[in-house]
Image 1 (cartoon, rainbow over the protein chains, first blue to last red):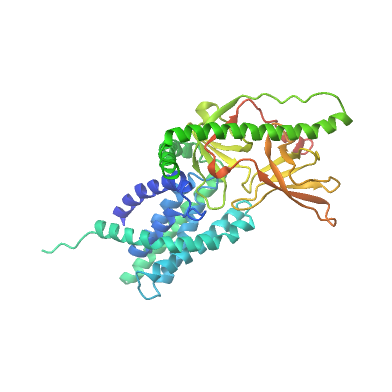
Image 2 (cartoon, each protein chain N blue to C red; image 1 turned 135 degrees about the vertical axis):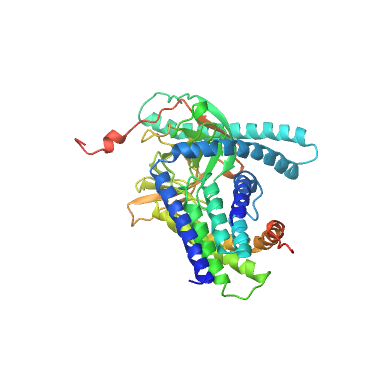
Length: 166
Length: 286
């Protein structure tokens, strides 16, 4: 797991810069996907829950640096969502096509509900429009997960230590 | 304890440690104990975000714009500036018209628009949260920006400085849920509290006296009440009036004058000093 953390920090920093400076200029049907979340989820689905929540934690903290929301809230929501879906994923048959889509949609739903709940708990007002807009984000993340998942799959294959034959 | 159980325990331990750290950071951030550390972390990142944002703008313009990019951009910028000035003039004229009615009835003196010093800043980033509305600008503490300073664009009020680092500042937009600004309507002179509707939500003025007759199209301005914002900055226009006779107050839906999604340059009003009204809210003898 340790080598994966060294990879997570630069990857999440780059994604955070993209999330705040690049993605808002190119919205997809008016929506901005949460790229660090999709990457952390993909990594978790590929490498297991431990690495998934570590990536989620780092990604969430990086994002919170550029948000008016309190530091740590995104990290907590990311971790809980990824922990929940990987736990569910273990009980489901392995599939590299449908499973990431279902997991991304489910994880997004859980993440957004937890995130909005935590914000509400900390005194931020949440409008009904944000809550009703959750479904659009869920669909968008479900559609975007496959290219990200496959990209992470090749990254995983590149970085995963290979067994040495003696 | 077999290997499976050990893995399970490690998994929960990792989660509990990370979750605990996140909660601790939230508490420390909320109590303001992380400000210095976060400034230290945000400063270099803000430089990278600013650089990336400038390159992204160029790429986006190339993708959006015509072949003769430079000429078209210059022409567009000139026209946009002209349109912004004319729209603002128009809104100010409507405001003057409303004031004229009042002046005829009450007193015969001209209002003076206070002249504030302004600092130009570029928008280098937007809030990463899916529900909060803020922007990051490329001017910070080193440029004299302090928390609470009002921010406007050529078309109207943008928001208020929420947090600063040495070289950047985060500005909460008037459309954010947390935003609450005393506002006044141009013609009817009604006052109320402008609240942001968040992402996708409608910005509205609440607590307007039911006796006031509001019109769709009325200009909305800052009232200056509370001392946190200067008076008479254009906010937007009333697009809908929510009036129910059974209630004590009415509500007006406002279309902000600023197009927040395409905001690139803003002005921070540096010459305005917010009035501290805490003394009036403190209990007597406290």
